[in-house]
Structures are given as structure tokens and as C-alpha cells.
Amino acid sequence: MSTTLLTTAEAADRLGLTVRAVQKMIEARRLAAQKIGRDYLISPEALSHISKQAAGRPPKALSAKDGGMQKGKRK
Image (cartoon, rainbow, N blue to C red; front, side, top):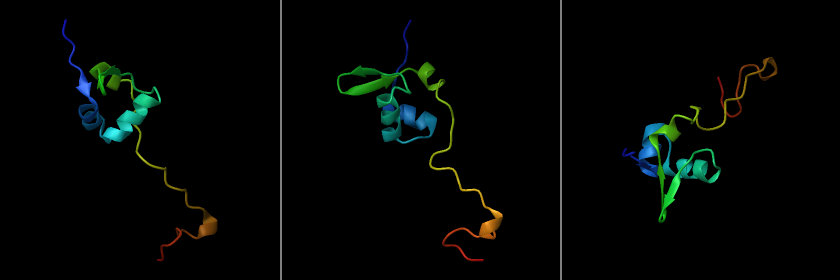
């Protein structure tokens, strides 16, 4: 039984993330990986355990007090 392992670049491509984001997930133990030499290898099954979430901070909700204007934007 031969299991194909993915590099961090391949995993990043499949997840739609940067290589550095994948490395941070490995360091935070949110993504299981094997360290072989200086590289990390990830099983495709480990990617299925990663939840899909949008990158970055969620947008602020507009309040009635703001009058529908966001900081720095004019109507």
C-alpha cells in the first residue's frame, strides 16, 4: 500500500492558501504532517480535516450610527 504524500506547495495549492500559511498550520498543529529532512510532507487525508474559511479579518457590520459609510469612503 503506497500512500502519496504532498509537499507544502502542493497542499497549499489544493487548499487555496500560501505555502507559508500551510507551514503555520503545521507549526500550530492544525495540520498533521511528517518532517522528512528539512521538508514537511502531508497526506491527502489530512487536508480533508481542514475547515474552509475565508482568509483575513471578517468585514465590520455597518451600524445605523455610521449612516452606511465606512471609514475613508465617501458616497
